[in-house]
Length: 245
Image (tube, rainbow, N blue to C red; front, side, top):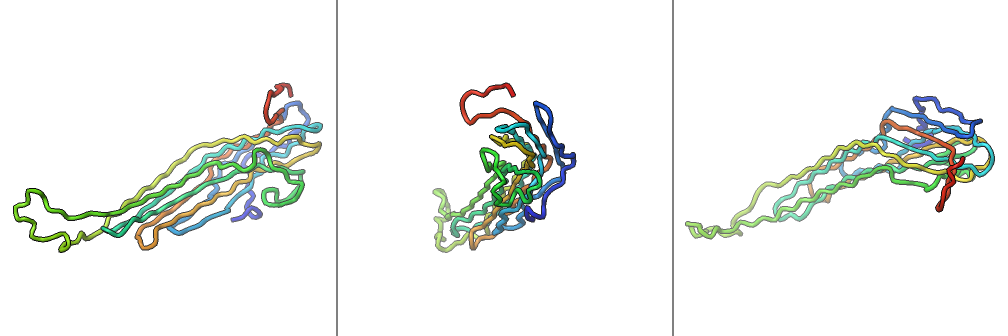
């Protein structure tokens, strides 16, 4: 999937906010968006993303700021499994998935806000943030020796060189977590005009397995219910904030 072809339609209508001293817009979606889906070891799923329109907002006057909140329920599923034989070295299976979020805004009507390099498109502070991530790694190594018990009655007629340990050891680990996350962004010093505000997020994932070993690794990541908010505020990079809007 790509940004250009995958702009989601919010379940709630996206309001146009104007005319009041305090401005607020909120919208939400409940349809899940799958960003990473790797079904076997050795997979690489990078750059899949989506964009959602938070709001169209028209702040009065120059040098206004927007406080932009993005909340979402993130589901990450990772599985790793690896088998090792005695004396065969260490095998490792790994699985990772993450989603990054950035908020961008531009004059109303600007196309491809999430992907375009148009100079009119601006990025809300602090820029790209990692919204949720997991890296899972599982290693197994079997190194067993046959030794003679101190009280052996037969005197251990067979030496360790005469014997082999047959078979293999398989170890697996699967994790499935779902959690709600939130991050605030700020759009500072807005000029006069009407702006479309977009939440842009990309998922990436990777799975691997040591060459010569049996096993598997999978990764899955999706964003479920999302809440998107935009509010006019006064904001500063540091120092004292005047609470009067």
